[in-house]
Length: 499
Figure 1 (tube, one colour):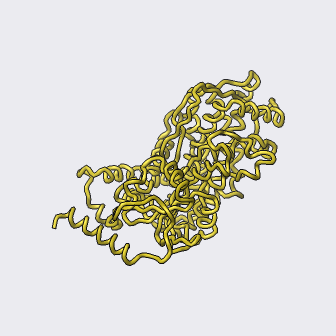
Figure 2: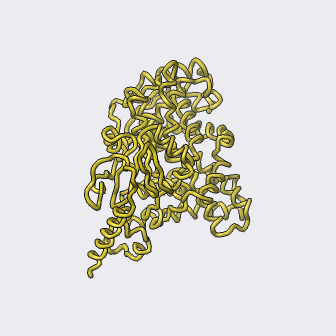
Figure 3: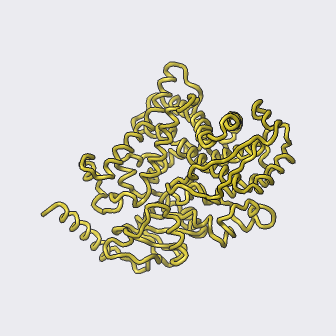
């Protein structure tokens, strides 16, 4: 029998068996009608899934079911649903789906974002909490402010390159924490490698992007490993390229610190502390150390680059918001020094700007997928064990019932009498339950101090009011131009002198 015929027969047999013997007496959540056998596989968008899912949710509700070749996908689009399932029932909703492409073929299955829920996941998060947890993140604030002073000087020197300066300052903060690493002048190789790894990861783990994640027979990845890249099969070529970057970001920074420690030239860092505590780790334990230290970049860096870029986009477009924030800074901080994170409790309007930045165009509009470990029931509807569960954060953060005029940038929605009517968007911007981003406190502090210092020193202006974002899993504003000028000679002196 020809291979293609055998493959097709296997798929049909598996799906028919599941449809005949895998049914519950309870209905599945409503959702768009699918086709026989393949379900909604042809209807699922590859890009900007959150927009399509939000439109479907208005028809089918905040708990929705779609399927792709027998794989159930549950899409949640309300605070009530994500709170009940992903947080209150986190004991069974904290697993990750087995992604054949990103997890098995590329190799990201052992990283903190993708590892299965269990002992490895708990150890990853425990180690990460030592350096990024709420009690630990305060130790980095003076260092963040120091790097932001350098950021302001770079902006003053070459304001047209502000997006590059954003990437560089975030990388400098995170890599100093993780590896005690100081960026080289120009194009730093470690920064470039980390950015490429984040880009590859965001592409590799999009559910449904690669056909091998939806064809049932591909659940045995050993079959796919024997398909050579020269066959021209696109996902195998991508997997080979992504795998090379994955190995580099996992091993090279860690090995660099081991080498420097042996030479006695290593600076204090989180990676160094991991190496010191266990001089002879097992292969498995060292792999956990590598991914935990390397994972600091993905835990906070790319999200911070996106949110700070959104700050420049929003504040240069909404100059009335900018002026009001600057008036608050002048009144509370004055003009004879730059603001610090200690000023944060006294700057409610700037705090509201930070909240609105998290809501307006969320960094991760579609949270990384969860997987339910056993059959469950919610609102009288069955949630099949093994279903992929996706939280549409963008739909929640653009729900008119929660945030009126959601497309407008309106920090005042988090002030005064109305602030209690608009939920803090940070509840929905950093993931959910036991899978929430461990770098969220560092990312939030970095965004605040960047916004405060930039507005104290500069005026932002752009003529084009168009707002466009990339369609990736982690969204960034499409590169844009922004005029950045010192507010005054006194402000320029503060930047130059670093006060």
